[in-house]
Amino acid sequence: LVVAGRYSARPMTIPPPLRTIVAPPRQGSPPSNQCLVLLHGYGANANDLLPMRDALAPESTAIAFEAPIDLGPFGMPGGHAWFHLGTGADGSITYDADGVQEAVTQLAPELPAAVKAAGHTLENTTVLGFSQGAMLGHCILLRSQLPIRALAACSGRMIPELFGDGADVPTNIPVFLSHGTFDELIPVTSGQAIRAFYESNTEADVTWEEEPIAHSIGPKMMQVMRRWFDKM
Image 1 (spheres, rainbow, N blue to C red):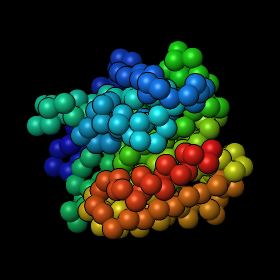
Image 2: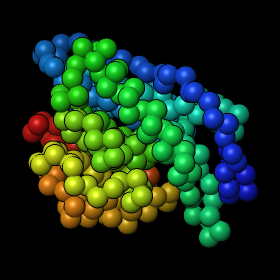
Image 3: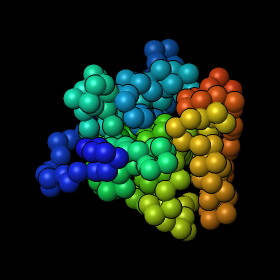
């Protein structure tokens, strides 16, 4: 919980399994063995990114995860979060580092289990995350080292203490990164730092896209991302 910009202690409990929505390939799409895992951002839910599957990879099976923290009691009915946010002394948005680690610890084993249950493999799975979901996507690749096919991470925050050194990222793995230059929640400099991290510390095949928008995924980003999916 957020209390005056700081986080209260959380009891150590075993969390229930994460809610997922599994959507088969769009009707009329050619047969495919591809899977798309969707990780939404703060205040959204498992339905939020599902329309992106039809726009980007309609032939893929989509698995949309829902974050475990219910924000209804905090005035956001239907909203969920992967971890709590706070406010720094300078008014900037901070994040609960322990909460990030807890979210990754829970997601890391549940993601491959969900992919397998849907009849797919990690090697044919692309992870797409926005904001908090992008941060988890980076951790899944960089820290948990799940052998996913590709990562698309939009409007994420740079968290060096959780990213590690990037030494074990597979060579030429496709990584799509995007950020709005007018992002009022997570500055574009954070996205640029993530891009620099991948380009300096890994052999990933990085695609970067900026757009003059706020904290969101814009039409130009979608166009570039669609081409990125088509190339894989």
